Image 1: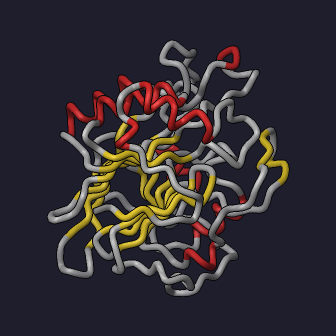
Image 2 (image 1 turned 90 degrees about the vertical axis):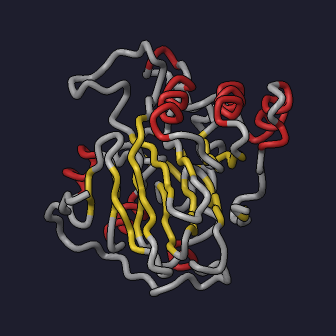
Image 3 (image 1 turned 135 degrees about the vertical axis):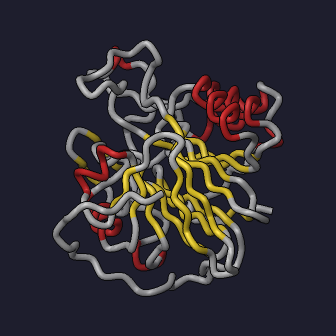
Amino acid sequence: MSAQPQSQPASSISLSSRPASGDAPGAADQVIVTGGPTAVVDLGGLRLVIDPTLGPAGGKGYLVKTAPPALSAEEIGVPDAVLISHDDHPDNLDAEGRAYALAAPLILTNPGAARRLGVPAVGLAPWESYELARPDGGALAITAVPAIHGPIDGERGEDGFINTEVTGFVLSGEGLPTVYLSGDNASVGTVVTILDRLGPVDWAVLNIGAARVPTKFDGRPLSLTSERAAAAAQVLSPARIIPAHYSHWTHFSQGVETIQPAFDDAGVGGALRLVEHGTPVQLD
């Protein structure tokens, strides 16, 4: 991908060169969900962070955050790239997360968000890819994939999107597990489309919490319910599933207590990797 970042004033955050914790890139292929939509992905010796929400609990515009992340910006350290599914909802990119992203060497996001964020953001339309060089001499491909942030029959805005423009990502490379990061996608059909286009994945990080805002689409879910996530897991099988974005915000209508039962009912309970926030899941 040859797209170039747009111009943007420098950010105000300064980060250490590598994480302060023992989970430094290169140690293992792993995912650490830190709370809300934020996940640290160590893959092929590179560190990626998706949708950084790094601020304290409290009101964030029209939404309310109930807990801080399990890892701070300083504990995560400088990533090789930040992935942003969308920049215009505070539960996916808060002020602290925005500063963190703008201090990173690279942001990959949807085209509209890239225009708003500026340097170092690169916009990827669905199915476009960007390659990062790995320390072992190989490459990690990051492919943008569709996401629908609400009911599929929801009214589209002037920009043509339901709710807002959102992208998911598929990470792949020779000798590496393939990882799907859903972003705020509420559509199981979209997951089918992604697999039809790109083939099977080994792991999926699914945003699950059945987010609802009363003023949007009559309060219908804006992200996967636990039951729809289980249906997506059936489609993704035999991929293993790491849940994200089901806590830390008051607009979630389902929480951790609904995830395991829904997966068990759907016959995919064995695929679930549900751990405490901040706990690494090894991508073995």
